[in-house]
Length: 189
View (cartoon, rainbow, N blue to C red):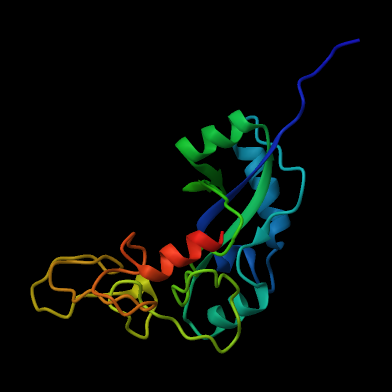
């Protein structure tokens, strides 16, 4: 009888998943994505369903309102080595390469991608976006410098940005280690 090593499962996430391909009428949804991942990436076995990282209803509404065209998914792969390889190289679905990250469970010291609040990772309807760079009423990924001639890309901070934390109102970005609210959340965690 052969003895096998204990099987490990690692949770990973992928961003910029095109909603037109995997959400809505005429698609086979995330079941199709799972099949594509396993077929197009040698050694990848996904023992559970692929899931949207954000509530599917919220994602669908944001898509219908032309707010987003892509979202993120999370799923489990068999094997730590497989997960590490995917994090290093990416994963392919429908001929398109996607960046892979390790998935971390949310806790008091986790930051919400929508409002940038610490410990607030639930996407509640009615919650408004806050920029992690300037505290403006827009997604951090939508931040854009208003200075004519500035070459900073959308979603990045530049020297013209007056940094303002949406959490503690300090003159730093939301993800800064100087944020009192972040330190407070880390102590609770």
